[in-house]
Amino acid sequence: MKLSLSNVQNVDMRKNFKEIVKLMKLSKKDQTVKLAFEKGYRVINGVPTNPRGKALKGSIECGYWFIKPFKHLSNISFHRLAAYQKYGNLIFNKEKEVRHLDGNSLKNNENNIDLGTHQENMLDQLPRNRFKKSIKAANRKRRFTDEEIDQIRTDYLNTRSYKLVMEKWNISSKGTLYYIINNNYVTEKK
Image (cartoon, rainbow, N blue to C red; front, side, top):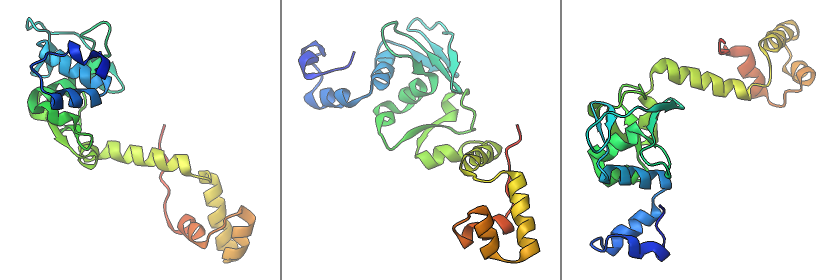
């Protein structure tokens, strides 16, 4: 349930006004994490448990484990619940992300969960995964295929003229042509 000024009276009156304002700014998913924790859901040794301590089955979505503790609310990720259990409201800081220190997003043990910046979170990934993502991003921006790059290099070796090669291939920058001629492109293997 998203809190608004109209339903503030439903909130436990022991909470002060600052806490109510903080709750109003949380996303629905963050509100669900907080509610699940308050109702007794926990992550023990990387496995979510219900309030009675029984292990829950989850599902994997986008590389993360999720549970749906409440039928009418959004699902929550194991790692967000584990981080809330460890750090409390600090996980709701918009400048912080929940990190998996070993790079395995399916491993949610307390010693593998930490908070950090986006950059730290990206560096937690295995180097080969970071490399794959960078190649994938670079390939989306590539204008020329591998065969065309080979042909551009051949044309330059035959003419030794930036001007002629740039005109033939409609390249507007000497820097771009220099990069194509002098650097290796890595294409993602499928």
